[in-house]
Length: 334
Image (cartoon, rainbow, N blue to C red; front, side, top):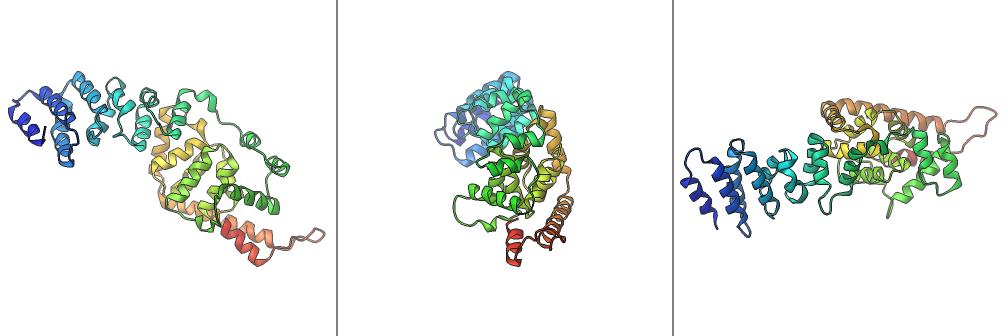
């Protein structure tokens, strides 16, 4: 069946027969082995204007038919996916026309009913699966005090254990930071990770956030923002995600990227869909220039701390010998 069949269906259809046309057009499209882009566009042009005129039963029929269609038109699938789960379930469960970003947005807008249908997808992105588990059982992911979270993270060395019990400072902080960086770097010297835009910074933030190890994520955040470890740690150890929101906005991440990181770092802040919507609204309304102002303040704090670290200690205390080159290297690594 070719695209001319769609035109013939439209010609034969009389006024008031939207229901029949809607079903027939989709049925004809699904019979195509490999539809062209033009045929996909024609189906969308034909069916989307009819969408509000057809019955729930026709929408359910079309959703089921397109869920088995390898080349389903994305716009029509997304429109059907916004319907109640009784209609959208086949598409949410099977359609490959819905991207991961589409699925996250649907969960944010429709909550648990859509999330449960999405959870049945094969090869579901693990991050989305984690998000659905958070929505399903929020009592399992209540926010712990930052000190508790830190104590629960892996401690490969006795020094690391001692470091988690008190704030890191000076040489001990930098040594711990170097250890963390060496564990996160597969190869070479990644000094050029201080980027505001680009996939590598986001990937590192996402992957370290999903480890559940706060120190790993704090180190990655310090690298991405160009600040020191202590400042990055203060950003993520606050009781709310407000500071992290500004950090992610300064990096100019998309709403979906920012949400994935935020829900991994602050899972207890998103117990229901309304909390997700609130986060997206706050992120959307936060002007990037305001976020960059906040980042400049963090950078100034980093520089001030570095200057204090390399200054001579007070009389009666042991002076830490730090060369100019080491200080410069530390700031660059930050």
